[in-house]
View (cartoon, rainbow, N blue to C red):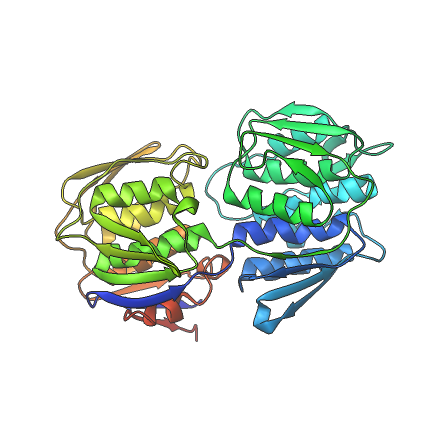
Length: 422
């Protein structure tokens, strides 16, 4: 397996372009199943997860063509559709479950394997099942597959989710767009990726109101048409690269970044002593003065602090002045990066869903192992500020969510390289 070698070398300077959002694109791509006309996505990220979704959609009968070096995805689903999403593809990625709602809406039936992805918690499918069952679907689990059927088609309904699940909100939105009548989703997820999907569906002819709030109203349509839609900027990639100058010093401008995508995160950076300035081109980030200050962080659904930035924030707080407490309230198994940071000299105590980080003066380079997508990049960030050389192994996780990470960080002065497996 490939590894990433990082050598701490001081302040960074320059610009980093932010790609389209992986999590938005993975929800937008299955929307092609809702129409027999083409759906074109621009500003698409070039990631292995996107290739996995392409493979899945192709197995269902859709066509996906990557243009402009992968930055544009031309999709179409005008032929015969296969209703079975096979385990061998679905097991690779959690977001594969997002074909369930569109298949049900278009065909009235679907057979979708239980999904895989990073091992960061249970992330149950029952929230998705309950949401689609509210629209009239009958769903049962047999031999590891969800067998779903909507006799006579899906019908509009009001449903309140017990947890504001992003994926379940996306499945409900797509399914309800072709359901008969009016649907209301309460306690809906509010993430920018939800708003982006709703914008795309509206461009395809759907009638949706309230996206970005906790209550979304969808008027079902008989059919949707084609559209062209730009993928929103990736707020997790944005936050990750904002932390690079925060950890190393210097000043970096993240092109395409917007404060409204990460307000709670920016508030924590300000409290830690990091300056964030909106420019005409993006966000300019720099450490204000000297050593950063400790801050407490609790992960919450949007607009709270993103769970997908918790590992990276921990890397920053390892060298903060004082003690920080991080509480993980989204996924119960998301502190697996902590022991690897301890190998680099960090002082971290983990108890259940809490991690206490006692700031140290300096981290030291060490061989470490990535356990999941966000953990892998947190170790790279830590390596940027550590004395000596850090070797991050098992970085296949990294390629699922970060586009050309070595190239982007090297472009602002980081000493980083990928070592190919022999």
